[in-house]
Image 1 (cartoon, rainbow, N blue to C red):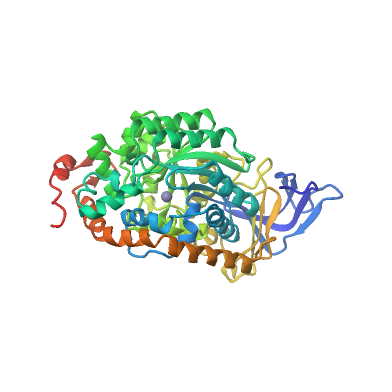
Image 2 (cartoon, rainbow, N blue to C red):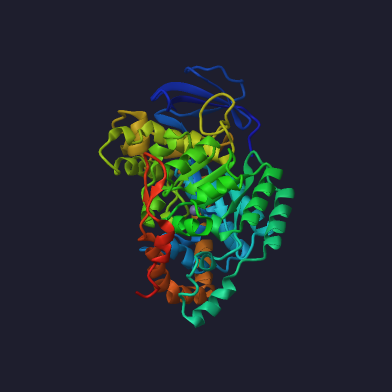
Length: 516
Ligand SMILES: [Zn+2]
């Protein structure tokens, strides 16, 4: 994916987040990596391609620690949906996908992320009823064609959303129960076999597109299945990523099923480690955070989705205090409606500030920027090879136009990156030394043709998923009564002292029968 000639970027200002400076510097790129960073006039090979970056601010490509490639064809389909309503709607919003749809959905997301200054992502993608080598190949090809770096993790489960919440199916009318039966996931052996084949014959350069495994939500899986996923990931040097304690109903189901928090249970299963990332973690208590920090695990913080689905406001200061590695994500377009990492950074900052007047607990813009670059890089398993502009790092670089109104005037590089920039200033984007966005356009992409393909898919899927939409409309009220019932149970997180109060098991038994 790289031009063989060296490249030298001249006349730029280069963001150094840790020093909060953006001094004039030249950047020499050889192959897919940064060879040298130095003062203006840096020596370069005679045949090096010169890139003039006058009036530009260079920053390391932002890294989206949690998204869902399959969600990009369903942006804007929901409004007042909790996480549980979103999951109940999934057979409608993400169902009946052809191979072309899988490619297209992933590709559109990659294009959006590149145009908005993001050069790598952790994509938890889903195929129903099980992942296929062809489907994952289509998703990987989408990132390769777009020229973006990605970790591609098939989301897998044994139980459907409806089966995974104790009592939910029983609360449904009988006729609906029969229809829900056709949403069963594939048998575990078939799912594990498909993943094993995919990992063994991985079709992509792992430096660019890495595989991982994403057991969707722990209580959608048996312990044996979670352990098998972990073993498979370990055998193939792949990461594990799962949604943990995202919503309060997830904690309540975990307490009922495990007698402890899902994080405590995952620790008992031996799953926590440096290759382990949890999505969201809104409902982690202090002990959960300590467990994750002690094992070197990561949290992908998705503030936009957490607010859009009413999941809550995560305590990132608490995570950082307990040495959890924190990355920042947008979540899928189904729950955040865009994949704008500048917006995700701004929201991460504002969410920390919205939780109380103690400014020591607020995130600084420097901490937010570090999470969206170096923190996310670690969560993706790329270590320190991405997320920084420095010698030896991959040349994943965003060039912001400092004549854009967001930078008039230029007061503070880090504060303006996090609080002011919204992607309007993105001029050029380089991934692995190759310019994939030039002058605000994705190189080689005909947006009008892409729009036609998207509309064809949208129209076909609208017809194909109509029965699933109608099924959702029949279950919507039940889900929206049952699950908020779980969310209203007494459960209080003590974020400072650890542990939680309230008798959760008694609370579960006190859950009013459905319909009250
Ligand atoms: Zn997610």
